[in-house]
Length: 181
Image (cartoon, rainbow, N blue to C red):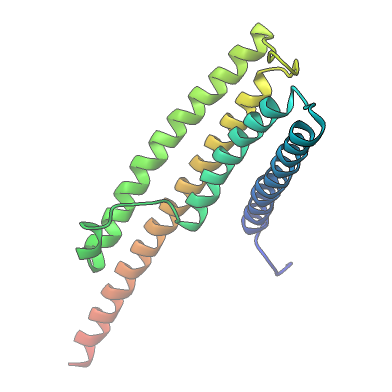
């Protein structure tokens, strides 16, 4: 039997690297396009008419894929006045319930994102300045929302498995303690 990293961890690593590549290359691309366009405008009285539109579309991709990355690392902004007072089992149950709610909402939004994607692809709409098919923008939305769904589902399953494991360990510890008395 082969030992090593399980397939699902390899897939998760590939997804994480893909997110980072999209976010990083998008940021570099936007910075370069906007900087070059600014130099052209102020020093040469000329600019690329398409630069702002392309930058806007890349920002959509960065935002949605970036949200997925935030879900992965648990770095979304939250109001934790209530949460910080929860300890132990109550905190784990809260995390599981919130994970289920967020997963359901993210799956619903991903479904709507794919509906928008297919609708815009069927209509054949293109952007005004560049002629880029609008479905490519909706692809970023649908992909980002799918990655957000994946992140919430993954963290919820991990929380549930950890809860079950801790409950099983508590029962075993209490059972072995009674046997020794």
